[in-house]
Image (cartoon, rainbow, N blue to C red; front, top):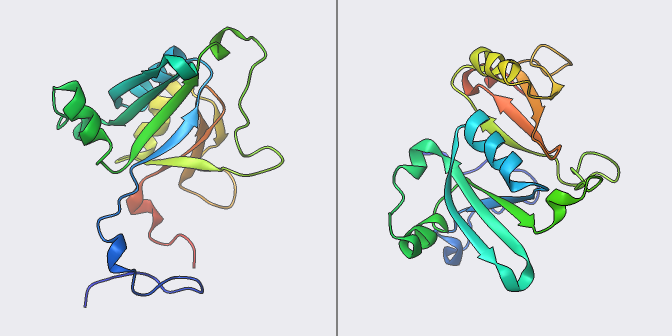
Length: 178
């Protein structure tokens, strides 16, 4: 018998046939300055920009990023790449509302200050120690280092807009939780 789902109150044991093929495509973060955020996510986190879409009539741009392995499969044609982007899993969308980059005191709510809401995104890495050294080398801001707190082997860093990013090495998490 293959794994289907953990069962907890509220979990539908047998999803409707109509939902077959649904894929969580992307999560969106609003960013103050796209150049700063794109540098962080491409240089530090290793993501590739799949597509930029501008909406001049509404004064915003969307940047869709993926891990390098996924990006290497993207079609060259911009229209085909747009359709392909929206069919993928695990995409990060950065939304830039034009003009925020020039406002010195502008800041988005990171979801972790009061009132809490959104918490974080997560990257799994092949080697947590090497990732921590890379983040240290790039002066990345930590919320929590892996050796701190009660939950060991899990780090939290901040992106340029203050959003939290959980960093995990999957093999170290086998005893996580109950």
